[in-house]
Length: 149
Image (cartoon, rainbow, N blue to C red):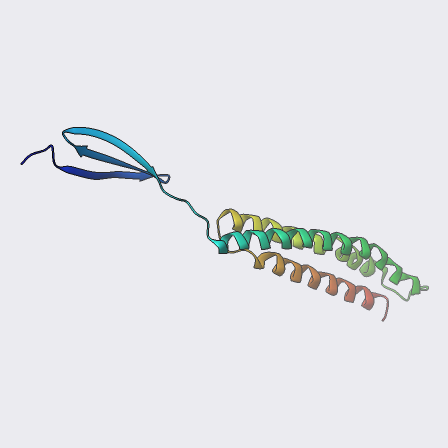
């Protein structure tokens, strides 16, 4: 057997996308490295873009909702001597102002965690927005009940 004509390739290991390969040719030993393409799929890019867009739209939307909720206190204008439960009205008003942004903030944190773990996360801002709006509707309903409507 003539070693000069033999070409033997042995893969050693793959670490972090770099493949080490030993080549034995003509009695010499050479170490070669090749880079693997680490492409990102189109679905992954779309998920990140949609998730970030929904988070930004939600931040603006819930900031506007929190500002508009400041004016819900005017529901107490119809209250006269002892006709309203002002303690319940105050608690519901605070929940209507702060609850939805807190719920959506938690959804943002969970979305970022899912994005960093490379899991599908476009639905998290939508679920957080739906939960935040539900909290707001419940709080406004409690306010209306507390003023006797």
